[in-house]
Length: 393
Image 1 (tube, rainbow, N blue to C red):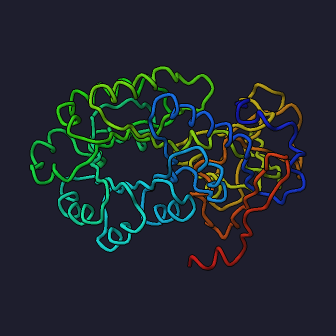
Image 2: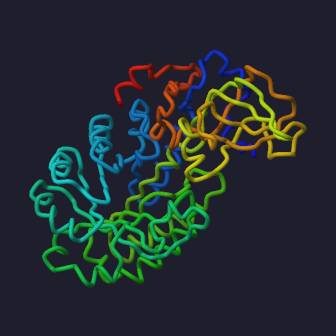
Image 3: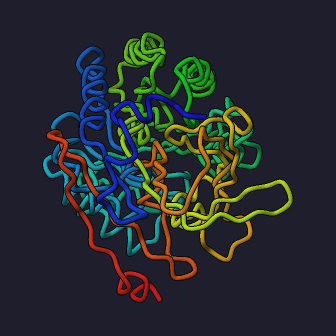
């Protein structure tokens, strides 16, 4: 259960004993290491790497990230604005499944690259984007699934709304619409290694290889676990160089997780221990539903410092949140000692898809966000309270 890379910079839960719980902690040293890995990829291949803000949008870390990456990727208007405001002088790319006209007009103030999800939207907004000097792209669907078990995150699943298939391209594309395009975009991966990208690129070549020589750039999307230990960097670099060689395009990657992988924790305390039959349940002040929603949506069991799989260590507990949702369960873990009220628990890899997805269901307070700086000091970045709950309602 415990994934050591997630806790490589943690020596003891007591390091966070001074924090109110629950709290998020961003590990600046790990962010720096991840960014240096990505910058090295850019230097060796000439590709450009963007931060996908849907996974990590803690903008007070953007000054550090902006020293290494080419810019940001947004999935909507507010993310595009955030990237423009907080990572100035860097590129801002945006993709949305569909744009409203008022949003699109405002996007023209922030975005450099605008990617459409359909040919109809390209036809509707393309001339407006071109008149504003924007580089325009179209998302394609290579219809090549490489995921198992997480269909909710598979853009190539049957019936997917994401991207244009070659069949639709042949039916709807016109010379006038094609002339508006500068690039193609595909995003098909989720927490995957580069051999999956290699097979996807073959599908892209088969389906759209005749179109790509007319393009200026190719965006290979996100889902690349580039900074994970053991990631096959050589195959990734081969894919980038293949696209550059075959089609003479500039290559973009827009990972989110890879930027902040293993760069954060959620610190929690045990509030109570209850028993139901043979199951011992520790109620925490952190909620899966509110504070780590991907645990339920994905679903997955997050790494926990000094814990093991159920039954591996002497004492097994089900960890659950304090909300009224019966399914507010984080997972089952085992521990060397019995848990007690007040014990500190540290969940790993909590920088991604947490602070940007959390919520105040049941009136749960938002955990404050802290940054552990390079000198080891803890800096409070937020001051959430009742007003943050009330203002949304």
